[in-house]
Amino acid sequence: DQQVKQNSPSLSVQEGRISILNCDYTNSMFDYFLWYKKYPAEGPTFLISISSIKDKNEDGRFTVFLNKSAKHLSLHIVPSQPGDSAVYFCAASSSGSEKLVFGKGTKLTVNP
Amino acid sequence: EAQVTQNPRYLITVTGKKLTVTCSQNMNHEYMSWYRQDPGLGLRQIYYSMNVEVTDKGDVPEGYKVSRKEKRNFPLILESPSPNQTSLYFCASSPGSGGFLFFGPGTRLTVL
Image (cartoon, rainbow over all chains, first blue to last red; front, side, top):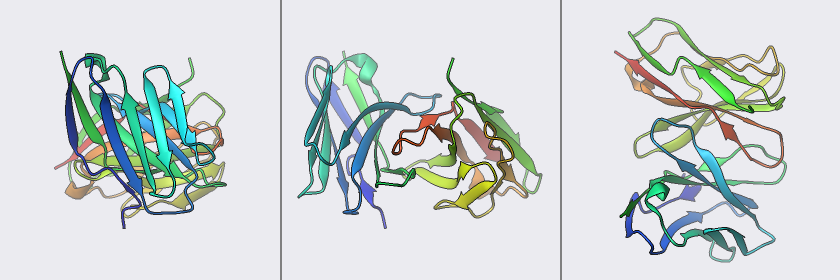
């Protein structure tokens, strides 16, 4: 049973446009959500997170939106840059647990 | 520099030949974990450790062992590797602040 789902394996956008990566979850106990970025031949690195008490968190070009009722979160990258081309993993955890449950990832390609 | 290191980075071996992938972190983190990444399956947790001498199974522990004799080290042991353990392995550690993981660079293992 996949608790964190990223239904789009890949996404291609033009440089300067908005990239929107989506993630759905099924476990209502999840209350902390993170996005990780992964370049080839490197380990995933933390990008941005959001707690369930918020519905939006912004960090520069990156914004994460959380819709608890829909159990849905999204990552917006504006404007997209070629250096943003990577695999993006959505992850979730619940209070008191260090365990992160990851989605399968979305490969973003930003074309110059 | 704060980091998680893994060795080796690449390994090709044969079925049944015991191997160990080392993992070390210099951030004094209590929590450490191993993940494997496979195409179409994302990141799946193999084992984790909440502290020294405390380890527990993740989602895909079959065929793996771990130990946590020191806080900084968390080796992954494959007693009798099989081809279905061909994968990309990541070690990660956390300060214990709600799922925020630091990942190592990865070990690409091929079992022939």
